[in-house]
Length: 347
Image (tube, rainbow, N blue to C red; front, side, top):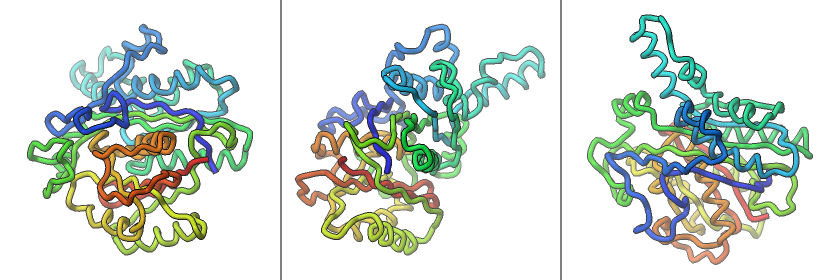
């Protein structure tokens, strides 16, 4: 079991869980870009050289690390395309300058592990340092890695995170592959859409986690990763997941659904909702947009909802009048192939 003690995020919203739909920042041209803070914890000489993904990841995590009163034993990050924009800039320079004098900064920050490595350098952390790059399950694999680490080292504390930026390279490829909507669609009305594609998003979420329940914000009870295009397999795996991890007499209070306005994977969400017929159903991607590690921001939202016990109306799809949000199941999917369940509960 993993206990979450501190959380921080950068998202397209000033506050990730906003009270009303009127306060939700609206998408522009089917894109939800993050509202970036001042990143006061990063020296300006370093900040101005950082690519956006590195800036978001380091800016989110560094304050958490600096607040710790005990050593951090490792940094584990999940990202599908971290640093991709800098990679393309570097490759364009290779062509433009005919492999002559190139800017080293873009090269240094062009790999996905640039976020974890920068955090290690800025915090002088010499512990475990790894980045998981597994497309739509990158954050879940990072979470699984931390889970195994804590089973081996129950006294350790880790930084767990998920980061993604909207790079023009990846956006254009996914747009041409019909993963994003062609028609102008507002994030405030995206769930009413009857067309293919979703809205592109980005963000960063960081967590200080360990195996100590004292003063924890939330606990992660279980995790399930799946690769399938068969909805019956999702149903089968969910029923088994609930049988294994939800005790008799208990139930899921809230399903935090990764529904994204694309009609193609909608049958997956409907199947999950049918099995969890007693749970309130809430959606979050009108706040974040859709991207490979959106489940990291979903986990942040789940922690906030468990703590506040207040669910904004604009997130609700089906209201079962649950008074206490003690058990939250996050279900997310990526491009109809990669799926995950994360069970979060109140400590």
